[in-house]
Length: 135
Image 1 (tube, helix red, strand yellow):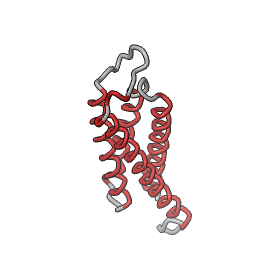
Image 2 (spheres, helix red, strand yellow):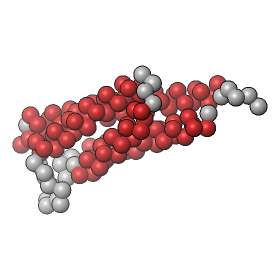
Image 3 (cartoon, helix red, strand yellow):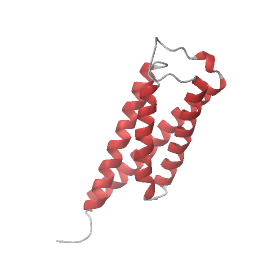
């Protein structure tokens, strides 16, 4: 048995890394733009009914902007091969999904789409970390 990973395993590992990093940057851009929209024109967002997680939309804007910029930076770090960025990216993706859940009363469909993308990012990162341990 050789100690070198097969070209197929290496290809999958590299592909999942690029997929996760690209998707993380895309979600980061969406989050940052969503945050800027809430900061610049917070009167645009209308809350549907009473919701337990009620914050001022400007506060939500800052939360989304910070998460978005962190996601963009982590995606770049992942593409540069920084191993620490995989774990931190998983944490940011989880925080992003939680923030989007709490954003549901403002834009429900958009929040669900971003949560689904966050789940895809987490799946890709977990799969990549699992492959890197077995390779």
